[in-house]
Amino acid sequence: MKPKFGNDLTNTIRHQSQVIQTRMAGRAVIRVVNRCNDAKENNNLNLSECQLCQVPDAVFHLMRNTPLTVCNLAGNLLSKIPSKFALKFCLITELNLSHNKMSKLPEELADCIELQHLDLSHNSYVNLPSVVFKLPKLKTINARKNYIMDVEIEKVKEDKVLEELDLEENPLSPKSHDELSALTKIRVKLTPREIEDWEDLTV
Image (tube, rainbow, N blue to C red; front, side, top):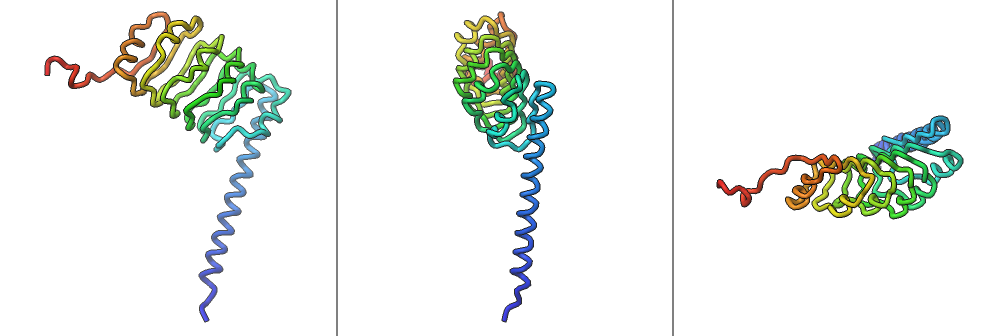
């Protein structure tokens, strides 16, 4: 008859692991609730570094009577924000979505008519979401460290409010890089472009 010690040990370890995971999840929930309560005092919702894979419905419920002006969702695991985000938080002036896994924004974000500063840096965008050009008061866009190759230059030119566009550390095409470099009415931050071998006439 084989001893059960091995199985017992495995079960014990599995149980302890589950307990630890439950405690960690519990602490994460408590952190979110505490930060929502803080936001009721200062209208600044800081849910950065909360291990969020999505924006919990409970957040919208807790914040239903709070006119938020700042929302920070940086440093999570978000791949998107829900369309109702803009409906619930339409008065925010600052939105930080940096250091997530996002590649798109909901068209409903255009309802955030007071939004002035948007941080999309360190995500997975391959282009600037068209909705950013529908935000009537947007002054700054930080899209640093993404995978953006091409930018709709005409939309940038036509934007009458935009003051600064940060596109550093993106794999911009030579055409987009050159056209952005030529813009003068807004501050465009670009990583200096490396000349390709075929462009270097001295070779």
